[in-house]
Image (cartoon, one colour):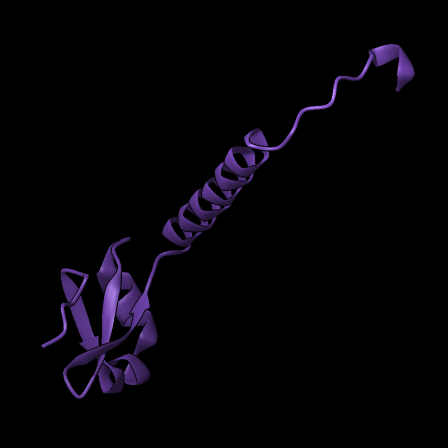
Length: 81
């Protein structure tokens, strides 16, 4: 049995029948799209998706900073730049 990571779910058939109604009923919450009663996809509000992407970018930058912090440092004078 798969865990559904949303409080709301909809069948793919229902989503195809009336996508606007599903989006409106979601009320800015994620909706699990089910195929044969198993989650196949998640319909995520645009603002939530944007925040997720920004968070992923932040995590990638943080990892880059951590990896560069372990590199050998080179002293440079500002006047030499």
